[in-house]
Length: 389
Image (cartoon, rainbow, N blue to C red; front, side, top):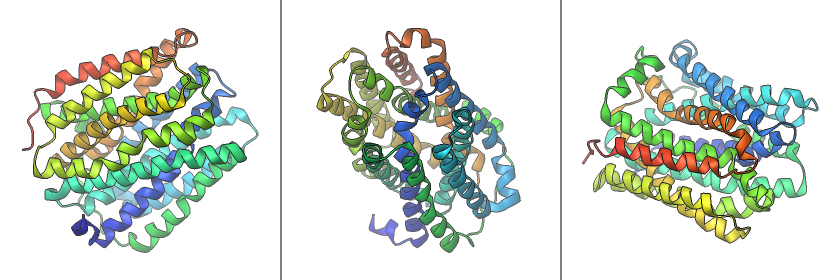
């Protein structure tokens, strides 16, 4: 790790990663509940689906935008726009505008994350991809671990408006670091590959396909947790503030402690395949536990979700490491494709949510049944993949 931290620009990018994580996660577990105050579950699901679809469309245009505006100017523009949009989302009195503002926020946040990954790739050495990406994920999830606690405290003392204003303010130091240290970074020599071509090439490579599918599965898991688990636990009698201030911070601990060490192990000892399969098996077991668990005991839910994040950390880190050992900063469309697995997964989860919404009122755990079956299915694609060691 010491060697990585000697790279000044890499350290700056890690600091920006932490700030991005705070911005993303302070409101993320509360937003579905915020929208649910004014709209039905099916409309909330549809809002996430529309945001995800438009994020994918925006990503298709990403390489063209980067060539036209350059990575720095592109990141600067979307960061400024995101600050304005998230504040408007929190302060508007016209609730009919909330879905529109959320969709714009979803798109900008996705593009911001992709641009951050492109900067990260610019400072990465192939031999240390696992360590660099593992530390990146650890820092990202440290911010995501702290953020729900901050969000829960804010909601217990103030309101959703303050929550979204605080989220916006975290991007102010992000802007400072971007302008001061990354404004003169030369752009990579981007190849002309769009998202659809990248998808086609990925699907024709069984190894990249396995990594991408694993990323899709773990992002589907995250999407279910973000959209449906707060609503589900509320129906069981667990307050949103307890979910934010205790359950989620405890559950996210593995996502902070494990990624760097897992990435290092993938680089130096084991490769990715075995740990990826173990992670998927843990995700399967923990997801089906959520189906049968109906207790109101907060510590029990914290332990179950902590166990699930051990699996998620394994899958996320190994899929990340494997994929980015195969592609680099010169392939922004591949980066966009991989990062947008969250959008694709959110579309899939949202569509399923819409289709089964009449049953979710009586059986909200149905989302976890569908998710568990999808995880089992994904393992069949990972088993034939060729390990990197």
